[in-house]
Image 1 (cartoon, rainbow, N blue to C red):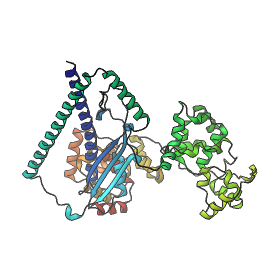
Image 2: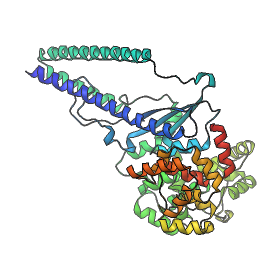
Image 3: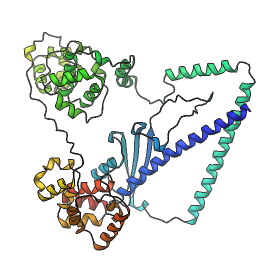
Image 4: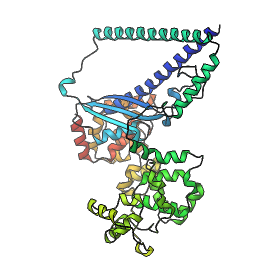
Length: 484
């Protein structure tokens, strides 16, 4: 009876693993279709493949002795962005290269940070793109391959079942079964602690050390090591990151310090608020130089830029060994000057030597959010209301409505009526202006689709038409000629 129960549990684990795989494949298929439908609007030869790499997690579920199966898994409807490690998109086309608009569109269609999206563009010779219909022989081949695959899969499952039954019988026949299970658990723990349970990535010892040094030191305690840093140390750190333009490292450090430390920095450093709004748009980057002993007693040069510091070092090479590695790496010195500075003995540094530099000119973050129909009409009546530099932060079809009619007609000729309907959202007067640029038959088809679906500003079509409104006319002519 115990053998039957164990066999039933094992088969359940197999079905869970299979459902997990099918769920992942389903996510990839949805993303592939979503990207391919949008890209084909301008490039009918485009073919897209998507492969998702997921983060690995350790389960706390009950595990079957001697196997990796457990009772915990996740499915497509439970996936979170944090579960995805990387999205690999392969773009096949007869074009000579991928355009910036196509790359931007792919980033917009995949709901994840664009740093996790890898796009590989492959040009296919025209003579290889010969469209053919599905032939009966193709269907026969697909059926044969499917039957063959299912036969192999069933054979493997049956073999695994026999192996498990044999293993259970063997363990039940031994008096020291509990001792063996304990030894297996100990061995698994040892393997996990040594990192053998994770997939290995070939890299040099030096690269791995630099990437993991700061995380290793922090993980040794429950609290971040930066929580013990003084205001003087943190001020020097953020000043170096500010002047060296290490925005990703600044974001990482900001996430590791306490609320009290953040408040103190914002109150005391004149550049800190604007810089915080700037670096929070960057991806956090760990750097072992943040833990350098220099910051235990830093120099008073928080207001000195790299340009000014480079001039000081050129006049006094003895200053080189007194500054932080972050500063050294980005000084505006030639290799010959760096070698000379590195060989010069350290000298006495005076506080008054460090000048006050002009602060960096950082782009101000824009977060207008979704604008109302009333706001759209204000823009429609006075298109100079929004400066050109800020138009990309105001998502609306009003920009397309303000374009020349001939230009809009040319763009709409390339778009499918159903695709347009999914993003047909704007103030009524703006939509009426755009409708005048659509042929009568296509307009009737568009209106019929609007009766059966709800358009949304979150739809890819809205984003696409919004971007068309921001483009200059000659840029779109070049884009359309390449796509055709």
